[in-house]
Length: 452
Image (cartoon, rainbow, N blue to C red; front, side, top):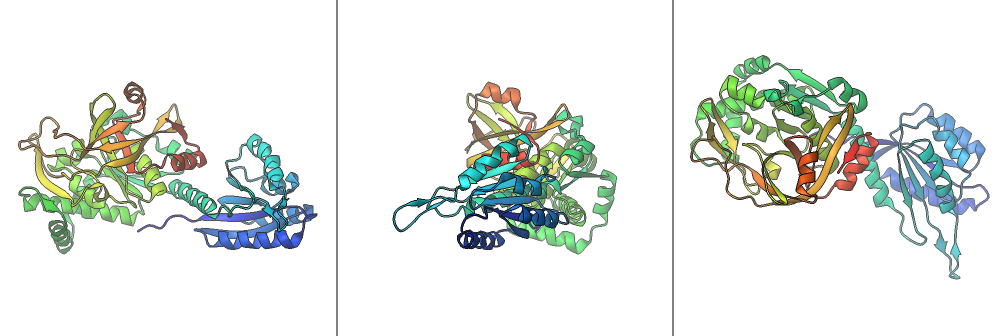
């Protein structure tokens, strides 16, 4: 299991030397102590009350690579002091945090005037183009440690996404335009790396799989999944060999996502679909999608990294007044299954004798979207809706008795016509829960424009 990236944090506690330093000092130590307990690496803590302090902090941060500055206003602060510390770090987000005042024993509100500090720095932060999060506390309220911790986690998510790596076995299945990608621009703008591997190499590696390892995978599948019909051992063996090879690729190359050419790849060349192999691979730490859909994998990385849950791709099948039948012809991550994972042998035409995942999909509130390129600029189509039970259905062409493929009725929160005209591809990526605001925050850190 891969660990979430921890954000490197520098805390700049700012105030004014004319105010009581014992009170401010105790407050600063409390803040520092609590931030140290959060899921981050605190590189340094500075207290800036005057120009001398600012000069020392500016020199100190020069040798550090940070992902976030926490500017903690414990009182009013003369803005140029702290701005001179961060002025050369416009690519580093700022968490601007104003601590509220307190009511003394006599009932009088005592104000260190942190609100003056944060309203004094915000116009400069906006004008200079910093990415920022603002937290302004009210007097006599608990400190916003949960909110601070959550933002640090989102900064760590953005850091992890930038360092992500995708492995593709093949390119743009069926020559689909929406599966094409610009590897250089993706690396330049976001930092995500794409590696591609030869299908010929994969086929040869499948032949060389250790027999004992393949048998163990087959035994595990038989013990863990429910078989809906008779699955030929030879087909199961082939799919388990493919899983073994793809798993080794993912582990050996530290991949965060992987896909293999299906319709014009394994199905036509090897005679079986990769659906079961993908089911075995997919979880919150490894995003998997069909058809070498690179930008679909980027979407999946974004959603899974932010939420800590598996995300799944869904394809549009039928349109209704306010709902879309979305589903997959044989693959979802186990986390999406409502109950035990169900598989069956299923044929499409004369060449595909593979194994399909026919699990029932969980219902509930979902966040979904799709990453795409618009004239060289990366954007994320983002929405939320409700996954509802689907009617019995089939994709035309499958051999009778037709498989019950994973699907839901996706109830939209936008007009259908607007949705159909703006959704940037046949695949959307879905995760359970409402994560709209978190996704918007992380995409802001990554310079990905949100389209809703």
